[in-house]
Image 1 (cartoon, rainbow, N blue to C red):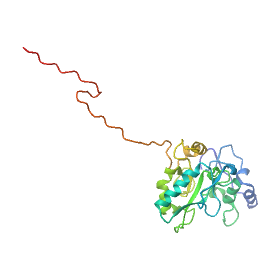
Image 2 (image 1 turned 135 degrees about the horizontal axis):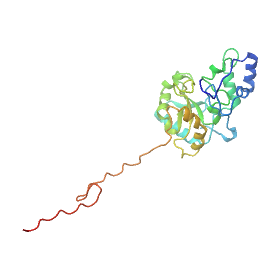
Image 3 (image 1 turned 90 degrees about the vertical axis):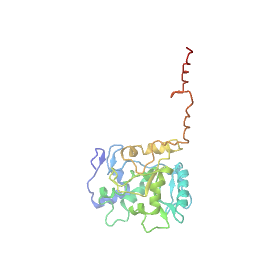
Image 4 (image 1 turned 120 degrees about the vertical axis):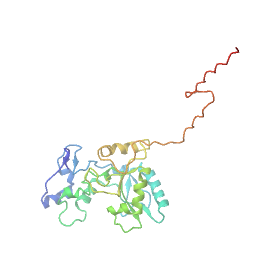
Length: 262
């Protein structure tokens, strides 16, 4: 991608690629601090001990751990989705990932042949290790149960009832879509991948989340996105009632002169 701080690399021999998969691709690439890799922004990983478990029954297949600040909004969103779509449950298929876990996802995701044969193409749909929003503890890959005929982690999720509900409502619970269709990062459209930034900066933990994603939100805005500032009209101010004998500014009009007797 034509950006000055983007790091690229040539294809590597198969033996070295296997070594990359075992020892983390990102650590073998020499790049300036803060540089993007194949379009992805560096995030590293948060300490796992600072995270908490997602609400019971939310995770699919593997445990889901998140930043504590996410739980309140996530719990409310699960309840709202359940009420709006009876018989369907909002679930999470992937939450926090360590850099090592991301390395396995990037290089050993069941692809035929040698892992990471073409890392640039692979990065269009999966972030390289150290460059994934999942490492922050604020990102979730959503799905629905029971399954609707759309495979997990597929663009068809946007056409499902749950996918449409998220697009219409997730921002009300502090979540925004990280990689919308046609995004400038060059990442595949991911209607299942949402990051939490809080409904407003005043929400507990939201300011820290927004600091983590400040670069992404500035250079590659989410869509739908959580507004930078929430404006709420609590009540319509009363309409002033004209007062007899007053001008538009509210001042009393001068008394009309009284006619004099001839």
